[in-house]
Image (cartoon, rainbow, N blue to C red; front, side, top):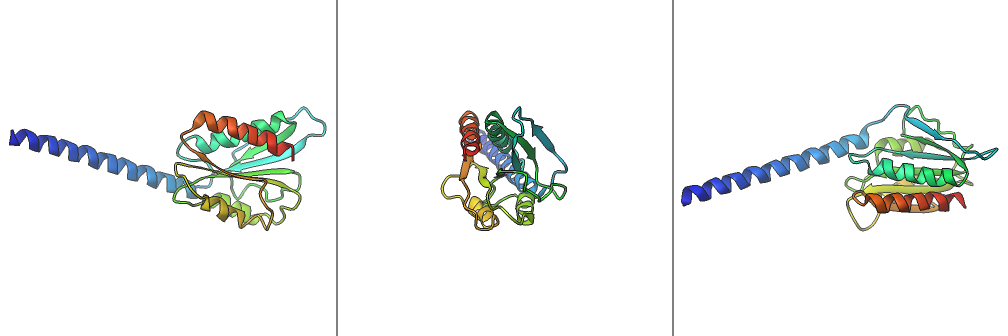
Length: 189
């Protein structure tokens, strides 16, 4: 009986060690993505409006599809409201001239209450947000305050965001619907 108990304990310890190792690898991967700069990933959602109103959606991808899903749902809401929407990842190649856009959306995954470094660097390069409808979002597993959004807000030069939202990364359907509606609402500003 004792030998069987030791085998069970050994198996349980191996499983727990495996779970801890996988969790650590996932967290490390998330932090690596928070620093990774993607090059020239840009999509354009064309508008039938002439001339179209213009919107820019810049987001940092995450380990899960959460950030991309939210960014694209907001973009669809804007596009269905008559906007031509440029969707891109932050990079040195992305122009900091936002003068053509009336709605600007910035999004980042949230690991340890931080903003993705490439997104923060991109926002810092922009000089003038006046007259823009600015939307900020993050995707996270956490609840509570939004220090990552507050940090990002510091760099939009005193412009109060129209909306700042933290989406839970594992609530796919709810996020898509809420993000789409956020895009529609921001279009009306």
